[in-house]
Image (tube, rainbow over all chains, first blue to last red; front, side, top):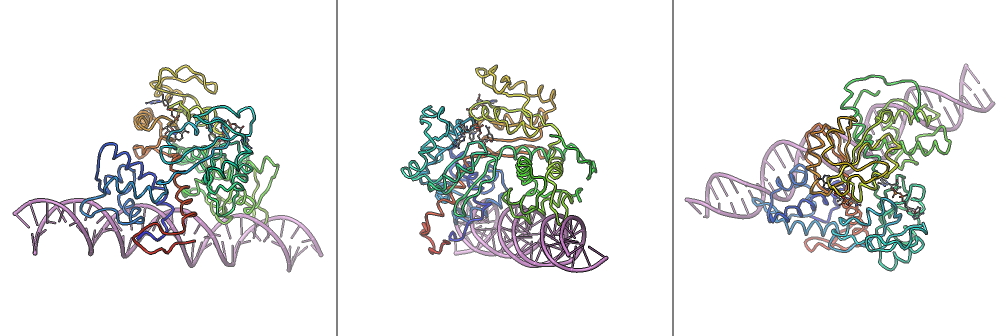
Length: 224
Length: 224
DNA sequence: AAGAGTTTGTGAACGTGGGAACAAACCGAG
DNA sequence: CTCGGTTTGTTCCCACGTTCACAAACTCTT
Ligand SMILES: NC(=O)c1ccc[n+]([C@@H]2O[C@H](COP(=O)([O-])OP(=O)(O)OC[C@H]3O[C@@H](n4cnc5c(N)ncnc54)[C@H](O)[C@@H]3O)[C@@H](O)[C@H]2O)c1
Ligand SMILES: NC(=O)c1ccc[n+]([C@@H]2O[C@H](COP(=O)([O-])OP(=O)(O)OC[C@H]3O[C@@H](n4cnc5c(N)ncnc54)[C@H](O)[C@@H]3O)[C@@H](O)[C@H]2O)c1
């Protein structure tokens, strides 16, 4: 049943299931029901079963799922059975944290280079890697077969950095700069926007504390 | 007009529109069409218009939107006309980066305290704030009226930290630890999971480069 | 004042995703 | 082998979100 395309919403949850399965394995639980796994992943059990059914029939009716087997199948589906070389561009505050983050390498993502345009930063050792000049990007991509690039530069530089990445052959970009990136259709961009997340929380928070205050139109007084 | 609830998908895009409007204002553009704004925000213009229509009728047919006026209306809707005090718990690699990030304070989010359980870190000055013991959480929340908490601790500590936050009165949580948090229904949690983002990219990347079906069970009919 | 040209706001069609419910499949006991 | 208990995989239906297409509303020119 797996030749069909997997729904995007399902793809986004597969990493969560993978984490839940790893957590079960650490507790030496070998088998689980959809109910147990769903609760560990924080989703509805019907949703979980439907998600998994898109990958194939890896469970046993009346029994449940073999944790290790299911984990392997999900990892294979996502593509985590292979190694993904990654470059990070912009080694400032955030770039340093990312370079030091072990959660990437433990899941098959290997940081092969840290790049920065600032000559003052170059040569600095971060997480065992030397910061290298941004101009070396395309040589590094060629050498290691890098497909995924991470952008942690200021917003003003992000589009230019992205263009160079695409030129160099990178086809997937994870963008932390708060700006919309324009890329050719074959390139995927995912954006992580921390300010947006806070703003969404603020919206709901405001609704919680203000039950009713109908002032739809007010003076265009602007607070900078 | 505006008393109706705003769809969640729309709420998630409002911050993007806000950024686009700010960017237009910086270039001293006072008026824009839905087409221009949509392109700056990277969305379809019909979607943009429908989103904005949920807030009210702030445009002028035949003309477009007044950039400053629309910005104010969106900011008001999100709740950015008021100040949101924030606490960050877990001042390690990521916590340091977050504390130093100017993008939060520039949008009405004010970091009032940095907390860490590690005694060795306490007293350290980060971005003008001293790292304080985690035990002071509830006093700080009371004193500043904090409604939003950020978790940047290891996954193993996240649920416990979250529980303390909820007890202290925090009702919105931004979680960076890769673990599912359980909270009472009146509390909102948003999760930022960088590993998941990379895994989603990897899934699509794998599909791009592997046109042949790796699954032995069924036919090799695969999209280009 | 009227018409031509724009652009918004929205109704309607379409697609995707979520959840309840259930038949199919499996296990173990007797 | 059959029956009862259990759990998956799937079907059906509804809600939500996206996109198209167009009438309504506005500006500007003549
Ligand atoms: N720090 C955070 O917690 C945080 C949170 C959310 C978003 N962000 C975003 O992440 C990005 C980085 O944030 P930061 O705090 O690390 O900023 P930073 O200023 O500390 O680091 C930016 C780095 O990018 C480098 N750089 C600049 N232009 C470059 C170019 N053209 N090519 C290569 N490198 C270049 C700079 O030399 C610097 O080292 C920003 O866009 C910021 O908005 C940061
Ligand atoms: N570093 C990154 O770029 C990155 C990226 C993605 C996700 N994350 C996640 O963010 C979290 C933090 O990452 P990090 O690299 O900063 O880790 P870190 O180990 O550098 O920092 C964690 C901090 O939390 C503190 N802490 C531990 N238990 C605590 C408790 N009970 N109460 C209060 N403080 C406590 C520690 O003292 C430490 O200072 C982790 O869950 C990690 O998986 C980090």
